[in-house]
Amino acid sequence: MSDLKRKKITICRHFRTQNTSDWEWMSAQKFNEWVRFYESSLPLKGHKGESDSKDWEICVSSSLPRAIATAQIYAKNIPIEYNSDLNEVPFVHFNNSFFLPKAGWLFISRLCWFFGNGEYENRKKTVSRVNKVIMMLREKNERSILIVSHGFFMNCLARELKLLRFKGHLSIYPKHGKFYIFESYSI
Image 1: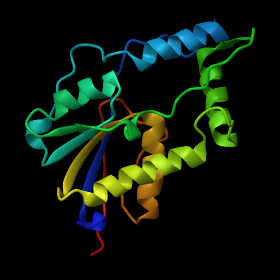
Image 2: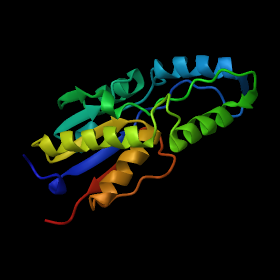
Image 3: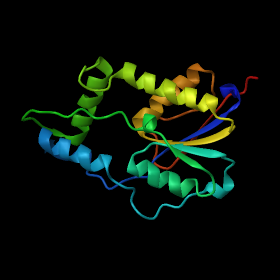
Image 4: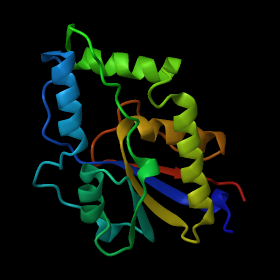
């Protein structure tokens, strides 16, 4: 087994997709429809990768279409593995008659995650997925790995990497297509 401490991990959020405004008002039903659309959406056209200038040996990507398409652009010359453990934390589906801006539905969905709504994935389940990803990374011989994932899941992964003494920074709202590098300087 190779040593995780000696790995350079580059985390990238998928490219931007066609999306509605975060402030568009919608019913719970319309939000649920938007979630289904978003989960199957592809990135907008016109993105170009910079993989020729990177030293990645392998790419591990979420299995959602927008991440797969991003990985195929950035990792043209290296092997790509698809792993559903890197998928975004699922959004809660609502059954009520409220109208809220999409940002409100997203916020409430993440509150349900935080407080552990039993019907959907909660923090404990997400951390379990993150730990599975970290174990998978430990077992890889490659030292420089590109991970293509999703904003909320990336924050959970970055938090756990920092607990393992990796150095790096990830903004709360990671930009689409931007690279966030995490390295360990200890031996």
